[in-house]
Image (cartoon, rainbow, N blue to C red; front, side):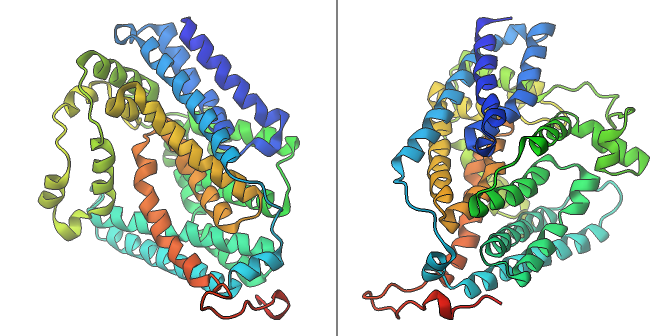
Length: 430
């Protein structure tokens, strides 16, 4: 094996080990990313070198770039945390002085209601589709809006942990319950991790309780199986009319696409990075711009021609798609390198820097930082397995849909034209 891959494996292995040694760091961004890469990307990388099928694409170029990106992720997270001054953990009384808790609850209900409406519209659109028909732009748009269900449930869960209000718990359970069928019968990895991280991070941030090793080990093993065998699990569920739990426990999983030659995420990333390096043809900001267009310009409203006209020209897409896998993404190492060459590692630094700030503030008790970290962690991990552009693209939706809630609930500061703060003893969240 190459020296570069050996160094990369050791670096990621050391970071992943922190989750076992210090379970309180399990959801720290670099540690969670290392756990994901250890179970998902590193086995793919070793398989690429052992088989030798992609030797013509010089995979060592990719391993070297990945080392740089992982180091930038760690440095950015540490720098973001160091930049943020440590404060005492907030109490419920301090939280109620900053925000009207009843208004925060109303905001969470509104988010769940909007997301629930989008789910209903998805069902209505799907009912009118013919068998095997591709998703329409309307369904894709409503699917994006339905994520507000998760946002509202996350906020209600935090409010419940702070206040023990049963109505907050009800809304949180109601919102998260919509994800159960998708997790059990769709085996969606990101959604599964999002729900798990919301629940566990809520306990950690508010109650100070980290995951015990007795729970951590089976969770990691279960997650490793789901991450690596999602295709086979979905095929088993479809063929056997089963669910996620039964599929993971089954010994006869079969992929529904066994007749197709499949390449994995790292193979796509390796070929992309090699082609970009050889051609010296870099896309600069076009992947990020195209992601914004893809997410926020619905074709069913503006028309497919208008949407296509807005996209940045990608004349080399066919060349880069030569080794594209059925069902596989190209990793964030690919699109960042294609955009900025080795300077693409600064994208990893910037994302991790922001996550480091949120992590430090969240552990200090800031509910806004807790909320955004819980939502962004799963999206942040897609930076490694899917693309960096998806993280940048989802920020307007997350911030735009939730900032207004916190702004609405924020109390006015005395001495700046606002009303005096209502003492906690007189505020009740029933």
